[in-house]
Image (cartoon, rainbow, N blue to C red; front, side):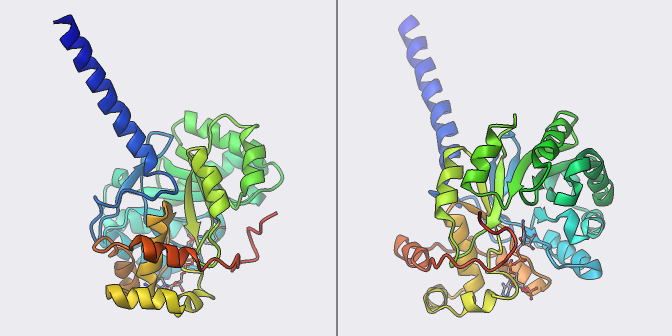
Length: 310
Ligand SMILES: NC(=O)c1ccc[n+]([C@@H]2O[C@H](COP(=O)([O-])OP(=O)(O)OC[C@H]3O[C@@H](n4cnc5c(N)ncnc54)[C@H](OP(=O)(O)O)[C@@H]3O)[C@@H](O)[C@H]2O)c1
């Protein structure tokens, strides 16, 4: 009998361990488990904070006023549950209004916002301001937008806000391997996520590898190459021929590549058709050969002058 209990306990332990291990596996550069995704419903991943986060969302950079409100509302109506905003975008209030109008329960929505460098010296106030503008009593994920003076102090203020229940998960944006390494030595809560420019012409494989070794999720800004450069990527021969083979758009192929690479994507759009199209990428799969072809497009070509690598 004793032997049987011991055997049963061992099996249970192995089962629990393999579940935890497979959850972590999907959080690295081997790609996410996309099998639970449906068009209009992105899968979620488990962050180190213990909270789940959708792996596809809508970005709101350069979306202002009614355009921002309508885009976020359209995204929520089309099944998005992750919204990316920032103090510097000047639209946290519009994001909050769209969330309220959508009728989607707050707890189903994952809101990311960011503190800007000008706010680092007085981060506690900046966190309270963000809560107020968004009209929520907690922020799902708060990032430091860029490295800068007082960033450690600002991160510590965010750690305090985590303890107070005002923020659930923490992260960084535009930090590269050396920055992250230095940062980690000075803080208590390891960032759950790092958000950097990533697209087929600027793939960041070294940062992704480093972050994944630390259990940090990578998220792509400019996932489609950014507003000014998206057409270059959409018309790339490799991407457009893969799109044709799957009867999908170039945007869908690029977004699917991000997710199969284990990178969260937050494409920005003010066009309801594009918004719907971008979350309709769970009914096909890129083969290893297609993934390798897109991996081969790396040009180390950054499309933005901000968030420049050191
Ligand atoms: N942390 C940072 O420093 C940082 C910096 C930049 C951005 N971000 C975040 O990352 C998000 C994404 O970046 P982004 O919005 O600048 O660039 P992006 O997502 O790479 O590209 C957006 C552009 O792609 C177009 N687009 C989107 N879906 C499309 C589709 N299916 N077909 C054709 N065109 C499509 C959009 O036009 P339409 O409006 O016509 O659809 C827009 O011009 C931002 O919104 C922001 O939340 C963060």
